[in-house]
Every structure is written in C-alpha cells, then in structure tokens.
Image 1 (tube, rainbow, N blue to C red):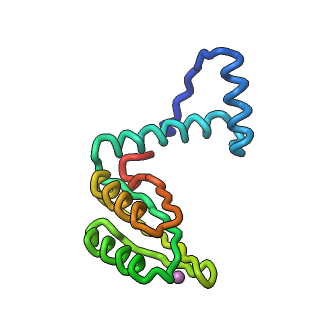
Image 2 (image 1 turned 90 degrees about the vertical axis):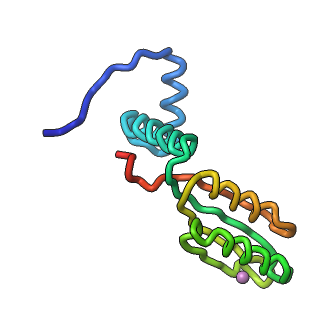
Amino acid sequence: MSNLVRFGVSLDKELLQKFDERIKQKKYTNRSEAIRDLIRDDLVKKEWQEGKEVTGSITLVYNHHKRELTNLLIDIQHDYHDTVLSTQHIHLDEDNCLEIVVVKGKPREIEALYGKLKSAKGVKHGGFSMTTTGTEII
Ligand code: NI
C-alpha cells in the first residue's frame, strides 16, 4: 500500500502565481515535486543546524604556479583527513586549477575546513554545496 498522502493548501492567488512561475523556470512538471524538494531542502538545512553527520562539496579555483598555495591547500586537507572523502583536481588551462573536495562529517568541521581553504591567499574563488548523507531523507 502506498504511503502517499494528499492534502490541500490554501494560499494567496498572487503567491501561487509566483510559485508556479518559479517552478516552471526550474523545470518542475508539477507542484507536488516542487513542494517535496522544498521540504527536503528544509530537512537538509535542519541536519546542518543540528550538527548531524552531513556531506557536501567544496570547489576551489586557483593558480597552480603559486607553489606555496598548492602545498598549503594539501596541508589543510591532510589536517582534515577524517572529513575529506576525496579530491578531484582538474587542470582548467595552463595556469588555473579547479579542485573539488568531497566532504563528510560534522557541519562544524566541514565549515572550518571550507573557511581555511577558501581564505588561503591566492584562491580565486571558493564555492560550497551542502547536502545530506541521505539516511534521514525520504
Ligand atoms: Ni592543475
């Protein structure tokens, strides 16, 4: 038997119009899937706020000619070897490198690692995507 539950939602017409425009832009085919994703996003946010074990990915763009920077980024990742699951290094062109660091652990540790990597002198840009281990999300 399916666990699917239907429920009605009352909301302002204008707000619903804005929601429908947004979900169309985001390529959702129906409201239900868009609402499910909003709920999941909120649950993932809650996992981070409550200090649960979470996952994520850090992206860094930097110039590899700065040897000290390359060594520093490696040193920082070694300091957090319990948190770093894997690192992928892409040579974007003759000068620039893109590094993707996949992480798993407590939000506090991941945020500290991200802060250290992003703030390393010479990193051109640092990005961060927070997600979940998936065990608590349906
Ligand atoms: Ni490279």
